[in-house]
View 1 (cartoon, rainbow, N blue to C red):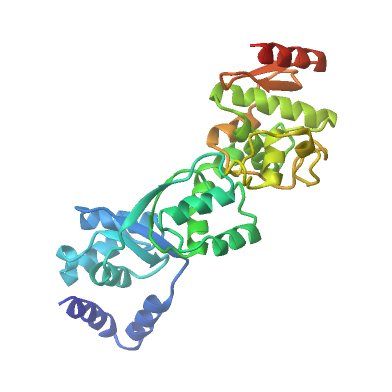
View 2: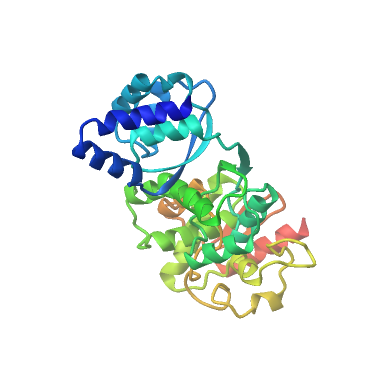
Length: 326
């Protein structure tokens, strides 16, 4: 029955003769970029058309609905997750939704402040990736660190690494890029630098109200040429710690602060060469809108996850003594 519907559609197209043959060949073979489309259960043909158009699969909802009605496929369209392509014909979209079995998806949450290795671990643990090495190699090749949007995703099992990266980067472009482009940027930083600083702020901050202050401290330091001396950059440079069984070493030593890496902001001035993690929207906004007229150059974490900010090094040392005393 399903094949009959497809061939009926094909027959209608080729009735027009040579021009029909040309159009059929074009629309069935011309495909854009791959895209994953989810059709929820109980979705009407009209809603399906809107979903397909919003994902760039079809150009016209009216044409899609007309073909569905003429072919009698309205009762046969499946729900589920489909691996389609952008810019395909309504006929081909209908064929896939009738003949393909929707791939089940699984929820996986990527947290703010995770580095590529942690993202790969979570995707592998949930069966989205069959292995991590290819994903990490490709992610590092395209310099994806910091540009994979932290969120909860619905993804199929055994997904190609390049496709996972594309989906997560698309979410970055949808959620982060517009903020950077629409915000008046007085920092003098480009997008790469904004994300780099935001990734440091993400690793430092616990409370949202402190993010603009932390960002202001680092921007103040950059302005006067003072090294950032940010612990997260050292943790990133050191990589996975076998003793602590974690990617971000907790107990940094003076020896760690001397570790030779361009990411070590205790040794090298300016920003590290690239982001160290995926920042949240709030951290990006904090870099673009730091606390105004905030002259602090130092901060230290107290025992609650908050920070004490200081303008001078002497004040900073006093704050450290008071916190340790407690």
